[in-house]
Image 1 (cartoon, rainbow over the protein chains, first blue to last red):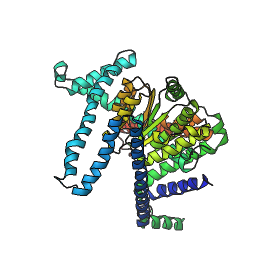
Image 2 (image 1 turned 90 degrees about the vertical axis):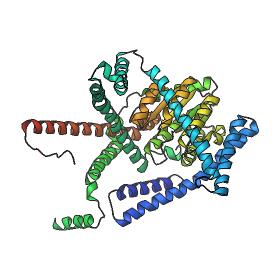
Image 3 (image 1 turned 45 degrees about the horizontal axis):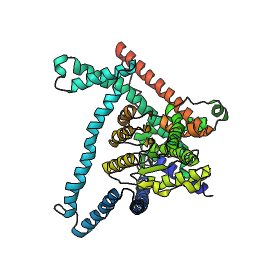
Image 4 (image 1 turned 120 degrees about the vertical axis):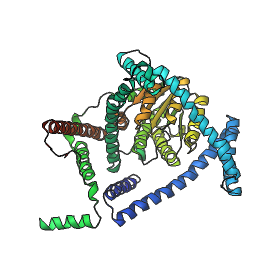
Length: 205
Length: 274
């Protein structure tokens, strides 16, 4: 019974969501919108669980003395932002917006900026001519890199055309092949869940 | 016959059926029929074998390595997806297997996520897997944590965990966006064995460069059948191959048709652009 009810709910809603896609009737739109609304309600409740888990986890780690400084920063951030938002609002010039623009946004940009260095280090490791396919990859990367830089034209006028050909044909065809595989994989996974063959999300039998 | 036409006409005119989605409906019905046939047809189910997938074969080695080094295993589904996404469901299937193995070996499994719904489902999946392994007492709810819904807040939190906990094995399986390389490179810097897989072709390139094993395309979705050995699930993987052959035949026919039509100068009609 514990498994049959969720499986039946999953099947019914899976079939309903599949059918409504093919209809523009107001009833079908209403069903679709209602299900999305219920999804938001479920999300709101699980967000409470997430916040409880976050706070509990950090407090228990502080008690154990594990990375206390980081934990205190995390809890402080979690408490300060809602307090200033509730106390002074979130309009332009409010303490909340000041903290968002001068603390949160720069920190996010900092983490994002790390990507540039990581791309360089990953490329250095990846583009080593250890085998024939790796050499082809290295040459393709060099051509693309040169064609997109200012000095590309110095080597040959054909370089941008060769780079475009690499991007539009070999690269694009490989990408589309992967995308077809992903699309078919998504389709069969969804069907497996709807018809109840795939039950891992319910736990083990 | 006339009455059938009237019924179809009525369904379309009242908006119950959106005629612009007809081609999608036909393709969907064909796909569903193939999946159902391969799944429930006993003979085709029994004959089927799946090729070896290096990334999935390495799962047990990765967990064994973490056990030997007495370090945790870190598993994260990425920032890009929610529980409705099939990639997240596929990731949950692999998580179930990984959790079963970590429970049996007595290895810590850490699961940070950006989505509270994913956190709740993952807690249940891991808890059930630990129970199924016979070690329910080894499950620690605090290891499955919600960190932040912000993309780079999540990346910073997971990066911090990787740097401090130094997991021996890292699983990056799910929907990843710009945070993919940040996480994979940090994992690489601590010499963790990394198994990754995602549905984003852009992030796949990053994973191939930075990780030890990468599940490409449908491999991520086939993992559930591969790891569990369930014949029904494996049969649906076969359906993917059949559909792939049909798509290839369709594309080839369209290319030949269009080439012949262009060379001969005859307007053959672009029937393939339905």
